[in-house]
Image (tube, rainbow, N blue to C red):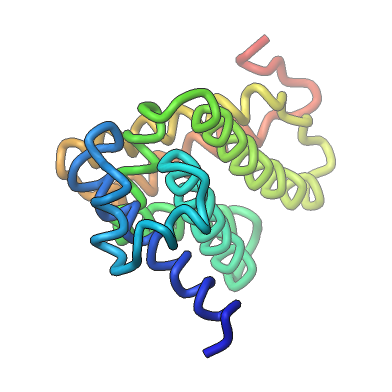
Length: 203
């Protein structure tokens, strides 16, 4: 195996280990020693790839966000039907991914708040990227109905933050987040389907 491939494999193992250990112990209690032990690599290898524990956590978080967004994009692309069917497919994929990815879900929902300013900035960026996905749904909706009013970007951000909060509560209680599909679709459509003559509820 080439050196680049070895480093890539080691990095992937460290990111997976970070998610696993943080899900088990929490970010504050997690040490670099815990992560390298779980990954099966040396401490020196860790520091060749990451400046510190926080850098590894953020890379693991960002990779998880990319995987989550990719699952949504694929589901939307493959969905049959109108924009509502595509919206539902994306929401279903989002919830299914969080239900499946136990370790990432803990990082994404809870532990991101324990890391610091850089982590909070990463979370804010993730929320805005999901808001962009909702805006893409709006663009499909307005293609079918040109009278629809452009949603306020802040309203889309509130939609993302609110749905994330509901996911957090369901995960913490041990419930199945996939049961939230209908309420997420209802909330999203309520934000996306105001007409030009309507007064938006956020004004």
